[in-house]
Length: 136
Image (cartoon, rainbow, N blue to C red; front, side):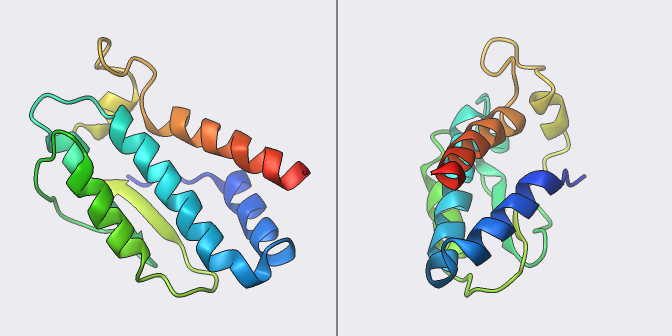
């Protein structure tokens, strides 16, 4: 089930149109990759299934599952490759994970590895960085 962050998305859209119109594509790619990287490396690892199933979608959310990736390097490399396909314009960049237990991990079921989850924590950090850039 996709989770939307409307205030963050509106701020990002405004920032990219007003402050960095000539660099909006690069800015959006860097921001999405930063968020993906933080989420991937915060994802708890048992077999690598959850960590390996973070996927980037351009314009639509990916469906299906991918390969296990215990250290996250293949997941990040594939995410960066997909982000390279992003041209520009107002299109949604999706970061999704389709394993059936990802919401449990996000809710802190892995008390030892990720008690605070991955997505909300990573988004809060990136949003803080973005807000500081926007205020400067």
